[in-house]
Length: 118
Image (cartoon, rainbow, N blue to C red; front, side):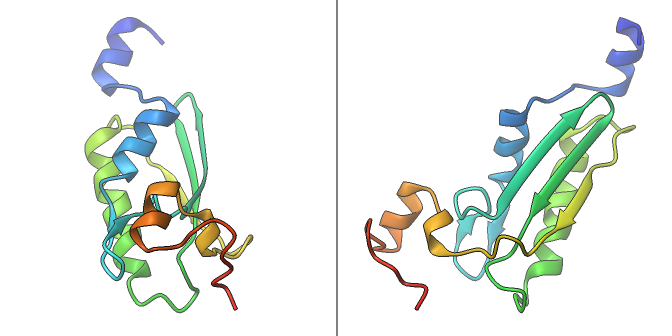
């Protein structure tokens, strides 16, 4: 690919920049972003390709379709027009509160050593 072709395709992002885009997506049921909640399991970038594996807090999440739509919209604004992300909703491993980042755990009053999955 020439520099001109790359410029025409738009900016390329690294994994951290993709995470930053995904931090814009808020789970409306809990009011926190999907990265901080630990819902994004995998980001894989390759030339012209982006794979994201993510989950919801529960398979019965009523906001799942909306969140996936928000992810697609945010990525469409950030990615080159020629790149269509492959977003996969996965259920393994099952999400649990220990997957949240530390700030989010503290926000919800979840302290280390607490097992709230029971």
